[in-house]
Every structure is written in C-alpha cells, then in structure tokens.
Image (cartoon, rainbow, N blue to C red; front, top):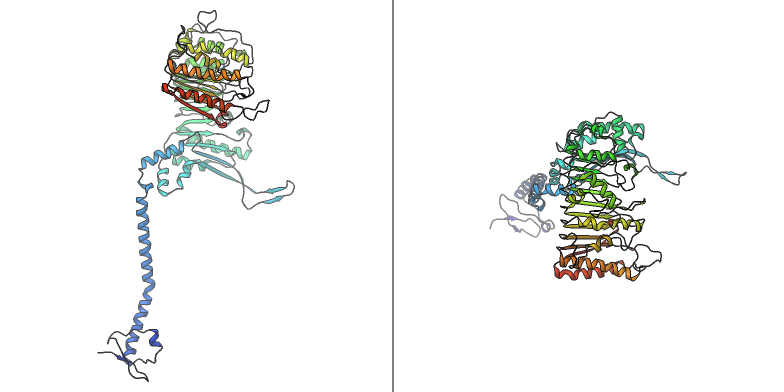
Length: 586
C-alpha cells in the first residue's frame, strides 16, 4: 500500500496520501515527533500556496455572495410588494377611496397659512414675566389630508399625486408673515386643470395688518388672482378681503365661478357670468348694478337671519331659474317694511322647489311672503320660528275672513312633500304660543305632505307643551267630520333639545305630555299612512330651581319608547335617540 513514512526516534509510521496531494495535517500530528521528508515538504509547500490563493479569493467570494444575497432579497421584496393586498386593489378603487377620505366633512383639503412660531432650543428665562421666552421665526404651515396619504407608501404616493382634484381645494389664512406665492405655485401645479375652490381668510382685517405682512398678503393674493381665480369654481372670502382686493386694484373677475360665499354687500364689485350659487349676508345694491346674470342663479342663501331687506324683494323676481332659497322673512313688527306696497298680484317663481325661511309670526309673515310670491312647485319647506318681542296684531289664517292668507299660499303648499319646523328660543312663552297656534291652519293646507320634522330648539326657557300646537292637531279622530290633517304623512320626526325638570312639574302635565305623544302616534298608525316615527330627547338634565338630582326626563321617554314600540304590530318603524350635547349646541 503506497504511503509516506514518519521519521522519528520511535521508528517509521506509514501515512496515507498521494504523490501529488499532501496529506492532511491536524493538531494531533503537530503534537507528535513527525518530521516531513523532502517530497512532503514539496507537496505541503504547494498546498500552502494553494491555500493562500484560496484565502485571497474569499473576500471576492463573500462580496459576490453578499451581492447575490442582496439581489435575492430585493427580488423577494419586490415580488412580495407586487403580491401584497394593498397592491391588488384596483387603482380606480383607491382613487375613489382617497376622494371620499379627502372630501369628507366640511374641512378644506389643503389649509395654507403663515405665522410665527417658537424656535426649539432657544428658551431663555424672562424674569420680568416669570416664564421662558423663545426666539421666533416665520414659517409656512400646511394642513392637508392628501399629505397624510403621501407618506404611507410609494404606491399611494403615486396614486395621490396623480389625482388633481385632491389638490384643488385651498384655504389660505393666518397673519401673512411670509409670502405664500411659492407654496401656492407648488400646490396649483399639482391640481392640473381641475376647477378650484379657494377660501381666503385672515386672523385680522387685511387693512390692519403690519406693513410687512400687508406686502406679503398683497403678493400672495395677487398671485392667487393671476393663477387661480381664472379657473376658480367656488370662492369664499369675507368683507375685509374684498375691500382689500378692491383697494389694491386686484381684479375680481371670475370667468369660471359658479359658487360665491361672501360677507360683502356690494355685488357690483364682482364679475361672474356663470355664477349660479350665491351665499351672502346682506344685499345693499339694486339689481341694475349687479354684474352677473341673476337669471342664472339656482341657489340663493342670505345668512343674515334678522331682517329681510327690501332689495331682496326686488331681486327675487329676476331669479327665474332659482331652485333653492334661504332667507329671513320676519316682517311682523319690522319697521323697515312699513312702507312696502303689496303688488297687485304675487310674482310667480315656478322654478323654486326648496325654501328655508326664518319668521316671527305665522300669520303676518306668511301673509307678507305670499302676497309677494307664488311658488307653485314648492316641494320642501323649512320654517324657523323665533320668539317675538314686539306687539303683533291678530291676523287669522282661516279662509273667508276679513284678512286672510293669500290664495298663493294655498297654491304654493298644495304639492308640498317635506316640512321642517324649528322652534327657536322662546322668551315670551304665552305670546309665542298664541302665534304658533296658527300652525294647524298651515298644516291643513298641506294635503300632499309626506315628511314632517319638528324640533324644539329653545335651551334657555324650555317648556313642556311647546309642541302641543303641532302634536294635538295631528291626533286623528275617525269620527271627525273635518277630515284628517296631512293624511299622506308617512314619516314624522319629533326632537326636543331641552325640557324642564319633570320632577318639578305637576303630575297631570307630565301625564298629558306623554298622552299627547302616544295618542298622536297610535291614531296616526291606525288611520293614516304613518310608517316611521323618530323621537329625540335631551341627554342631559336642565338645571332647575329645586336642585333636583334627576329630572326624570330619561325615565319618561323610556316609558314613551315602550308605548310606541308596542305599536310595532301595525308595522310602525320607531327610533328613539338621546341627543348628545354636541347636537344640542349646534
């Protein structure tokens, strides 16, 4: 058997190997008296050179291996990303979801502002005031829902930046401590050619800004006027902003504007040929100086809820396409309306479908309204009734009386489908109920009514029987020869924002309160088309003079709910809700 020989004082020991390959060496061999031969030295030297060569190749092998590992890991990451659930959702669906997220609520998608802020790490004690002060710096801040989506992942980033309409609603505010033009330029570039919604507001009136801030405001608004207003579809600004723009000779021409919300009374400053929605507090100019076509207006909302100006009576007949109107029609006791002359016949506005009015007295205010206008296609009416602090002479709604509601009233409400009644703060309770007592006469004329919502909003002086003028007439008597009031009523909602302490009220009054509601519900569900009833009541106790810990409101309404739910055998849908304080204060 071929092999090598160990040379030692103990004699020769054969070792396995080959003529060309050195035998392996281990620790045990090194602890022996082994002495290599010439051939072994030659072979081991060659093996040592080979090992050195392999050792020198290890860094390159490791680098290649690391590169392979990283490449493999990257391919795994990319494949996992492609196969992830978030990637499998179609882009069209993501666009819809992002749009719903960004446009939910009344918040503006992008709020851009400039202001002062503290510089972190610059706190210094202020001994005169007893606290630390910081050095200040001006900065531009952005609050934007699209920005939240950008930071989630690259896929969402690409989708969000590719939806121009998400960047098309911009609000600028603050003290204008910096020029907002660069930030506006960036945002407008993302909006593409989408129609814009622009809202300008300032912490202080723009005319009273510091000179430096005023210059920044001028530059910002001029940039906006040049690059944003030409494709602005909805514009919101206050009186100070309008005066500022007019003073600085910033053009108020809006070739694409469809909706304007402003506190200015001077519409002659604005040129908007496509305007169809106007929300304004006052109108102080005659129609002949207004620079947009009133015949295009579809919606008009007058936010001043105190008095109606006579100019509105001149403007409304010119709004031949008007579909929705919200305005105060408080004529009772209004000295400014004493000189108004009734027209020979009311002006017909056949396009009007939705009307929201604020009144003081059913008798005089409705008489005044329908002596001026005939609304034959009215389908939805909302009436807010407030307390009256002036003497109102008696007027009756009954037909055939000496002073009756015009025929235009009956013609206007004969096709009415929806009615909403809001009973506001009641200070003079007895006087106000006398005026509300005309409500049955109003309801009698609404034979097509299918939905009725009544809400008692008074929080300062809640009354137990404030809605009796509505509830008692709604009770149906099968033996009545007068016919059923609002016979087609299918949906009824009653809401009490506040109620007095039931523990301090006579038991008979509380019993009558429950009896009226239950009698109305039971008779309606048996003899008419009532299919749905909603009953809301306050979720807090109104403080009373006796200091009662529990007003008993919840327990009374629990009894009411139990009684109404028993009517389920007639297939009545019922919903009771305890109103949170956030709803009551709205």
